[in-house]
Image 1 (cartoon, helix red, strand yellow):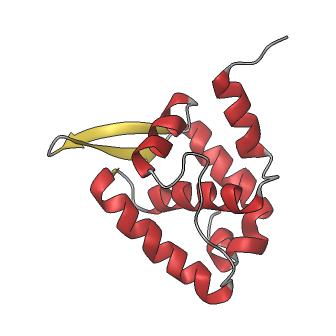
Image 2 (cartoon, one colour):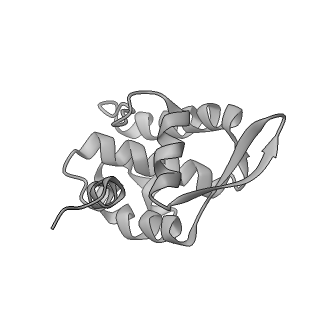
Image 3 (cartoon, rainbow, N blue to C red):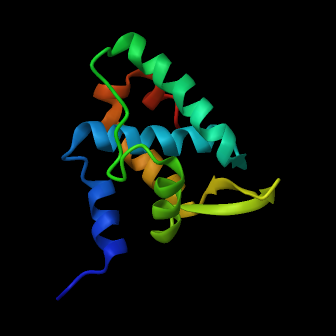
Length: 125
């Protein structure tokens, strides 16, 4: 039985074998979770702020995504697999929020990334 691209990506999100990529993906989802309806231009700044918090406790952690460092591509990838959605458009750019499935991933996955992300991961109930 073959799997779709979305199913393969979904499985990789649930299996953080590649720990820094998994933690980076979780950090991006967390950033959107705490900044509901955040627009694309603000996401990078907020991710950097969260990374600085993590980096103080874990100086070996650097953000890396499977798409490279292109946040827009990463967001579209997450939308394709159903964990993010565009909530509105502001100044011709999309604003994002987690779907119900995205909230599940964020909460279920926090224990797998807490070793890397520390207290930030524990702040999600």
